[in-house]
Image (cartoon, rainbow, N blue to C red):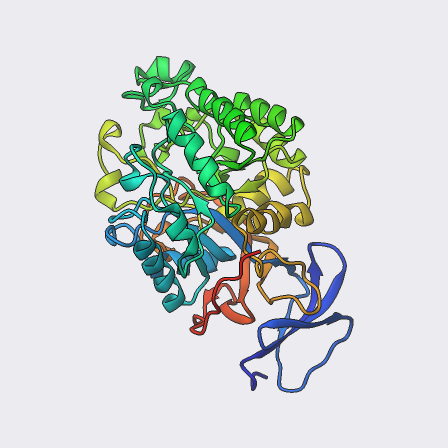
Length: 444
């Protein structure tokens, strides 16, 4: 049936899980949406059992390149992203060298274009070398070819309040956003896991919730004082939710993300001493998990961000105290959110699209991502089989990282197709081909 590689007819898909319709994709856009559509020379995809959603956008991905190609590369990370249903990712700055100059962010941006699996938007460092001493070249990165709009020292908190204030003031000039890793370092020296009953039983140094909450409280007040945008990375405690809810009620320009693993996993898993469950911020209690789910459902938490953090085997296959912190997440995110939010009745597929696509695209200012599935819009689309189930096997995934906390788990939902600007990077659940001619980023 396939004769024209630029034209695809998706038949009878449930748009956002609701009404069924056909979608015609031609020359990178959605050319038509309706019933009983037909098109000459189009490849036809039967989507009768599938849900059509806008391509997912991740505000928090660690692609590791340049410098840590043993853990991940732009190529392997974006392959994983496409398989997971993403059409855009934001690459965090903690590479080697750090993405703290226009030159490095342009390098990452160029590698993303060359790979062609998803849009890659570099995140610029807030401080030089992530050292927390002086501001990085924020303006130069914003004006570069990469058009950076999100800045973060993720992995390290910008703990100096004066420096944080200056960063918020600086990015306000071009409507940038500071994405804070909320962790008061003096409260977490030597911390190994969440501070609570389990840490007391195991004898591991505890990581108190207040270490996160105190930084969020400080930073929302700074953002209010400056009138700038703050984004809180990987929120993990019920107390953090309440602070963010208060800040939003005051009209403060704050957004927040939650990871899939913090929506499902708890610190009880640390009893196994399996380093795959070691992560920053740590897995918290079931009460925290329930508060995070409720906050995502009611809009207090705006988006899901994977915090995809691959590591080489030797960094995880060791004793707990020596193991690196972090988990992979690009290829399991959709399934975990389906299990925790959709199958529990907390949200529907339209709400899923808002927190995984529309809102993250707005925060990152990606004008051609997160768009509605309507005629004339860019064809960044995924087709999901919500009834399918699969068992997570890291050895079969595209990411280099084997450190999935979901290994061996059966999860719902399979991404059957990913269309990136009209090109199918994934078909029938498998990688197809990359899209080599990627447009320059469009800033919204």
